[in-house]
Amino acid sequence: MKRYVALLKSEPVLARLSLIQLIAYFGAWFSNVAIYTLLLEMGVSATVVALTAALHFLPGVVQAPFSGVLIDRFHPKKMMLITLAVEIICTFSLLLVTDVSALGLLFVLIVLRMAAASFYFTIEMALLPKILHVKKLQLANEIHSIIWSISYTLGMAISGFVVYKVGVSVAFIIDGLLFVLAFGLLYNLSITVQVNATSHHIVAMFKETLTYIKHDRRVFYLLLLHALVGLTAFDALVALMVHEYYTHLIATSLAIGLLHASRALGLVVGPMLIGNYMNNTRLRYLFMFQAAAIMLWAAVMPNFYLSLIASVLVGLCTTTLWSYTYTLLQHHTDQAYYGRVVAYNDMLFLLVAAVTSMMIGLYADAGVSLQVITLMLGLSFVVATLYYYWLQHRFELKEIH
View 1 (cartoon, rainbow, N blue to C red):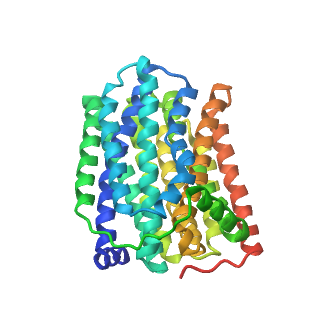
View 2: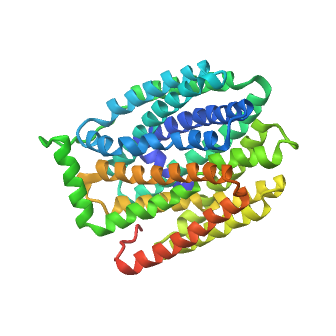
View 3: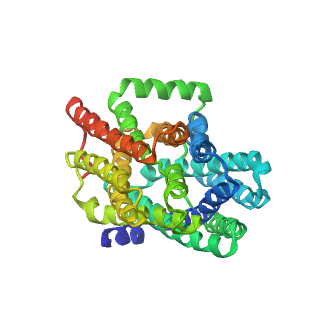
């Protein structure tokens, strides 16, 4: 923990961006619990729940080829402010969704809000390598993951209680106000970076990036490696678990909040225990542990309390997997392509997450048990382990330290 505090003290821009992350992410999870609680109260099908989860990821997939080019052409602060403004408008507009007849509006608002959120994230992840040394970059990625996890933990747990006590509308209002606060903090922040002066058209830059990825095979395979972490997109799975197993024990919003909070506890604690010991060789063991934890979760799923414990184990290595594979990609990418490569990386990651969410719903509606679906996700990480083992022996990967 001391190394994170020391980095934030030495990098004031990173410290302010981290505070903005904390506020914005915390608010986002308020509305997330409210949205899934509202859907379950409406009595929608598993496919609709899964589609809602997928819509949280799909905008980032569609916009990535364009967002990467924009990031490499324009100043990051201006674009970040625009994305936060879009999130403010869309979040307050969620108050208009009150019944099944407004599902179309809900889907539109989710798409617009998540497009803005995804764009903001991509801008920031392309910005960090320009202002931080590679060792500091790894720590910054870990800090970002920890902030996401802390916000996820507290946001889900507190929102579950708030929704249970006073309803979904209050959660949407709190979320919107937190985005307003984040906007104000960013507006007063000075970010000094050099924007590439290029006369290339967007199409030319797009082709140039594809050529670069095609010729640097390490970058291509590292893109795929990070994307595999997207298999941990469990939002739809958790909502369906609550509906299937736990509603007779506990209120829906509380169960959703507690399950997400338990997993997020592992997400927070994991990098603090593991991060300082990570290297390229030990990464394969994290993939193996992730596979085992998910399969254990599948085995104990019908028992709510055992499922809470298993959720902690499921989250224990996820943050480090995400941050370390992301840093490996940044470390092996030429600086001139940071924005575009990061955008394509997010596109693949979000595509895997979206497909995972949709398949969970489709398999559930087809009669496949949630335990079998979860077991399949665990086996997918066995495949990921084998893939990384092959990648390590196929290419020489530079150590981050």
